[in-house]
Image (cartoon, rainbow over the protein chains, first blue to last red):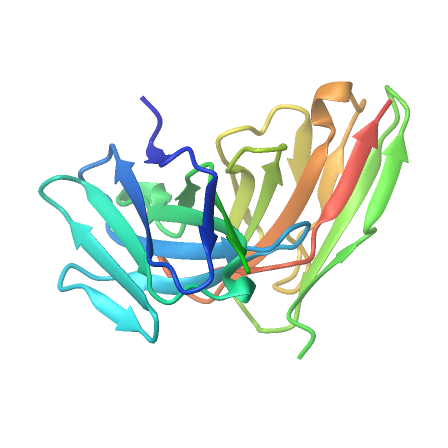
Length: 113
Length: 112
């Protein structure tokens, strides 16, 4: 089983749509969770951290369910500029593993007019 | 601040050649990382460093070496390049554990 698994995608949605991405992780001791965004042929950049209480940043809402080891990202009112690959990222915990991130394979989102 | 810089941007190597991918950061981050990303795949950690003089293997270290003599620089060395090392290589840094990692623009390497 992969350490971090994401929806295979790709997602192709019209402008204004709401789209949700899901992610599961296998290490129950994982400590920190993130969504990164990667534009085509560019480097990943942090979109938002994910907290157990859920958190929102404008049109983006992230949720974490530690019991189910499940992370989600909801994008409301999609814009053309949201087209990118979204990476679910988990930070391992313990010993020499601090600071190391494990990336999911990414989900491609294309928003069309 | 330039953030994380990488050179070169592109490189084509012949099988068996060697090269060093350069990475520098000007944010005084203790933690630095090297990843590779194959098409349609997530990033895989090659090596990481928690400070000058300290390095450790990641998930896919075979065929690579690193050094960290200063806080700013974290070069990645490829010895005896193989076609399986064709990939995009990203260097990253962070200021603390489990925090945001800042990535360089990447080096696209092709081994023929």
